[in-house]
Length: 223
Image 1 (spheres, rainbow, N blue to C red):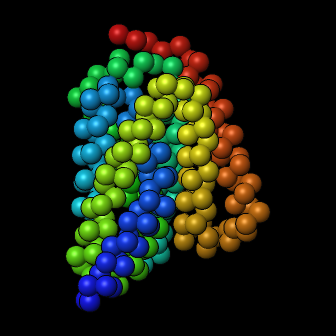
Image 2 (cartoon, helix red, strand yellow):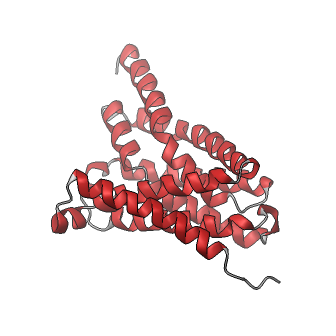
């Protein structure tokens, strides 16, 4: 590959990562928010690194990935569940959680959520790289610092301004609804229109915030 084309591909991939990393960073921030500050960085970095390694393997099959039924449906439901869970935990102090179990759980959340939300990123990088394996690896690896930095920044912001947790939950409700309605299984059965998508996304935004708010008020037994 000529050096000019290679450099243009590098620039394109960096721009793609900047544009598409926002949703991933938000869901990761929500997933690790209940961890102590030091463990947040460990959980985010480990989860993102494992997810990127899996992304490299999946990039070859990126176009097929979007056509597999239930992948985006499962991912969308998982994103909605993370949003509600974080809102339920919002009343608890982040540092009060048992670290080892929470850390492994958060890494799993990060890996699964990042993979299910990254089909757009994978396809964009696969297109920008034009089949160049070095560019594919570079593009997926360079996304790690972007996502880690942004997710840690968002998690700290949620600590400082707790109301932003509900904004994050609302955004994840919309993202989850979009993923669910673009799953091939759902498209094949319901043929959702743009209007239906807006309605479902709006309902999920309200449902996530209300569910998180109501469930967080339930009395829980604490050791």
